[in-house]
Every structure is written in structure tokens, then in C-alpha cells.
Length: 204
Image (cartoon, rainbow, N blue to C red; front, side, top):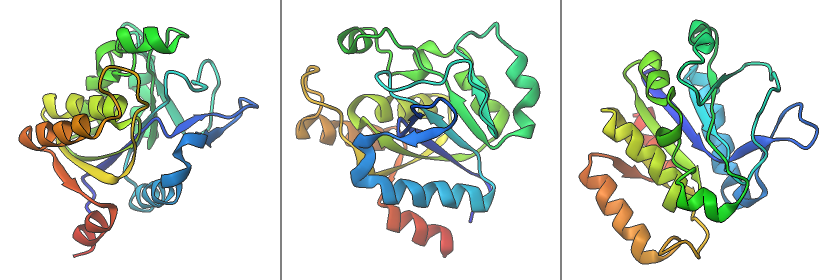
């Protein structure tokens, strides 16, 4: 597998109830097998895995979890930068207002908007193609892909390893919005493929 790949898991993971590890969010159940396959591919190839947690999920706080480097919101918090080379898994912190409607209106789902260290993390991980997948396609996954594309990175979006966003937030969750987003992301240069197509292309 291409050693210049990176994997971006958007909102599939959250802190477990005991606060000592990670669980997959229940909403991810329909794509869980595919997500686990991608995590395994990242581990076997030694590729970096960046992940975020849904604004309504159990986010990591002060917990210290083995093998995971937390990338804080505050750009003035620079200590994490000295430890990047010692990690493969990175938790990119998102903001949460504790209210779903405020999270939406303030765009808390956009990790590139609020995390002043986000672009720097990807710069430090080097020139890669980022495989993007996950939960909340219309908001969170779309924001992840857009942020990477605007920062100049190559992006591959796995269109069958995704959970659509909930309806009720403007046209979020509608087929029309989904098709429009795919068209826009493709026009920006993103590659769109299935998981099987991705695996086949990497094994060729």
C-alpha cells in the first residue's frame, strides 16, 4: 500500500463511558465493518490516522490515552508539536457548545474553522493523499474534505463508507444536497470511489 497515504476518520469514534478508551459511535453501525477495515489498513501500512469526535458525542478531554496524540483547539498550545513524530494516531479536537442547534449555527462541526492547529498537523504529517470517510457526511465529512482540499492536499472520499447527516438543518440529509456536495468536491479535485475500488487501486 502507498506509504504516502493518510486516513481521516470523521466522527466514528468517541470516548467510552469509562473514560479509558474509545468506542465506535452507535450511529456508525451500518458501516462499522468498513471502518474497521480502514483502521486495519492504516495500522498495517503504518499510515497516520487522524480522527475527530462528533460535537454531540463523548469528546476527549484531559484523558491520556495510549498511542493517541491530542491536537488542541488553541494555536498557542504548542506542546503537542514536539511529540508528533512519536505517534501514528491523532485526535483533532473540535469545539462543542453543548446544544445541537448552536453547534450547527456556529459550524462547530467544521474542525478547520475552530482548531487553529488543524492545518499545521497535516503539514507536519507531510505530503499525502488523505482517505476521508465517516459520520455526518453533509456537515462533518464535507468539512474535513473541504479543509484538506483548500489546504492543497489530495483527497479521496469513500462514498460507501459514510453516514449521512441528520435532517432538520436546512437541506442537510437530502439527496439533492448529497449530489451537490459530491459534484462540488469532485470539481475541487477530490477522487470519489468505493472502498473496494480504493483497495483494488492500492493493490494493483
